Length: 192
Image (cartoon, rainbow, N blue to C red; front, side, top):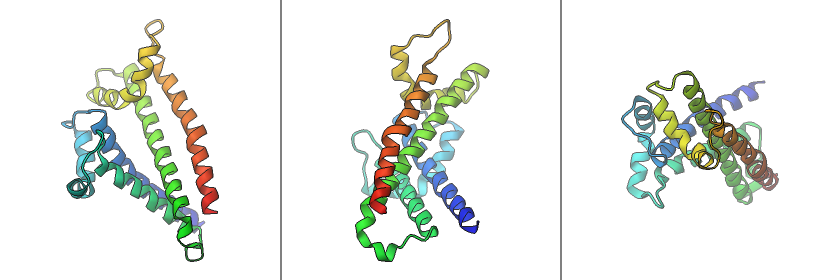
């Protein structure tokens, strides 16, 4: 029972940190204006790691690698910490299991990123129904646009109702079920 509580706390702390780094990356990639309080909060929380990393790790291909690297490292530390709490024999396994743990961390990072994107789509859809003129509506619309936008080009509104958030959620769930779950199973097989 104590082990379960420790795993929960470890997962929560590292996932919150990873979410902040992913949000910073996603906001920059989705071109969300950074003059709103939500974006300012994310910038302040992540500056301690991102600013020093930007000096040695420049952006490449339009991606903010200085935000993506801490996102991945937070998930890697979470995976290693959970395995340590569960009593994984790191000393016996040696370095041969490192690729498995890196893939397991990649699967955890992808899963977390997809869940965050699901949250953006849901929040954007709910805000558009309940209060489309909320000050947060443009922020969540911009955060959800890269996920929903491609479907809006294909699927027109039916009777004034936009079904693209539902389609986007189905596609993201399929990504979670098929490739991400397969990657996680493969990585667990490497770790043993």
